Structures are given as structure tokens and as C-alpha cells.
Length: 286
Ligand code: PLP
Image (cartoon, rainbow, N blue to C red):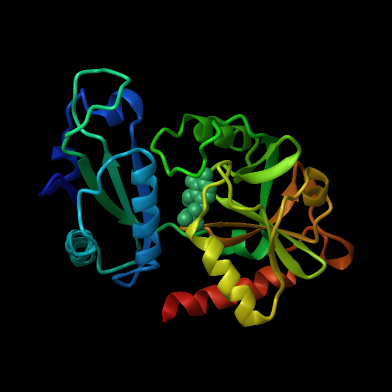
């Protein structure tokens, strides 16, 4: 299907950027991943706000207004829908600082490189939803600016591989004994019926689902609280839930090989997950 590169719509195999692009040389750029249901961009406004924030932290000017972003995205989505019959899509966008001779100091006045592509959305399988997924834990050895949605993802790649090597779906990370997030998802626990998540900080990416899950909990009358969560609290949690654009909400039923939860529900997706999942599907449909 078509992708977008610096004003042009072209086939993915024809899209080329300079070897001097600072995205290639330094990983000097940011990205967003937006789910598209039918042909509707889900929570686009929030993604554009986060993009703006990430760009500002790196002093990269936002190359487009909201209307310009939308127009370009719509064209890609329509093209994809026409070719593949409008299944759900995932829109990836990335902005790098641009092309310049290699120098660590940020050059000013560059034209940012803008790239976007769509792909078919691959949601968790019915089997994963029904049984939940296995995760492993690891020390959070990434840098201390996880709040920036940076294309420099080597720390996240290394973290993710720890679980991949063990046939698990995500690596849940802890910094100084406290929960931060997964390699490419946010992590929530259920404690005494309430959903708990780590506070927003420079160690955690504020996923678009932070706000969404807070809204869904409010709607459902489920307690919601952001506070530091210890590794022990995760290990004894009633439920553990992952969230991301592609995972939506997804139950973790094994952690480091041990079943999650207590009593009859041990090792099974929990009731709070089930309610959140259903509310999430409603939110997608409106
Ligand atoms: N944390 C990290 C490190 C991520 O890469 C992601 C992206 O999927 C998330 C959290 C979840 O963010 P979102 O809900 O916006 O997809």
C-alpha cells in the first residue's frame, strides 16, 4: 500500500531517506502509532497532543497543523481501505529532526522528515483474550526519558527480547523495585477491586490508554488510582493488565511462570479485565 514521505504518496519500496537523516544516525526523532477502526482514527486528538509534547521536548518544530496531519492520514487510510477492503488498520507516523552533517549538537532550521505508513491491525488472538498471556519481569535498564515517544528504542528492543526468548508476550519492567511499564505497553494491577497504575513520570510513557482507562473505570464505577507500585504488589496482584494501541487491554495470567491471582480465578483473566474489555469495545464503536 501507499506510504507518505515528505509530501509524496508512494509505494513503501520506493520511499527513501538520506543516510544523513538524524533519525538514521542518532535515532533523533519521535513517533506515534494510532489504531484505525473502520476508517476512523481512534483518539487521534490525544495522539497529536502527545506528538506535539514529544517534539517540543526535543525542540523539533511540528511540521504540520492538525488539519494537515488529518488530511494526509485520511488519504493513506482511504488508499489502504480501497486496496484491502477497509479492515482495521494501524497508522504509524514518525518525525525526525531532518538531514544534516553528523554533529551531536542539534542543528536549527532543518526541515523535519515526515513518514507515515498504514498496516493491517493485528489484535491479540481470541485465544490470548480467553486465556490471558504470559509475561516475564526484568530490571528497567532503559534511559530516564521514557516520557518521550522516541524512535530510539534499543532499550525497549532489548527488554522485549527477554520475554520473546522465553516465549512470553511482554517484559514488565521495574526500576528500583517499582513498576514502570512494559517494553511496548503500560501495565496495570487490580488491588482490592481497584485499578492501580504507576504515576506519570519521566520513567513511563503516558500511553493514550492512561486517560481512556481512567474514563472507563469512572464509567464502570471501578476505583482508579495512580501511585507507586512495588514489585511485591505486582507479584501478589489479583489481576495484571497490559494496555497499548494494539493490545487494547490484555490480561496477564502468568508472570515469570507463576499463575496470576488468587483462589478460583488463579491463572485466569479476571473480572475487572472483562469489564474493561467490554467497555473498551463500546468506546471503539462510538
Ligand atoms: N509504553 C511504551 C514503552 C510503549 O511503547 C507504548 C506504546 O504502545 C505504551 C507504553 C502504550 O502507549 P499507547 O497506549 O499510547 O499505545
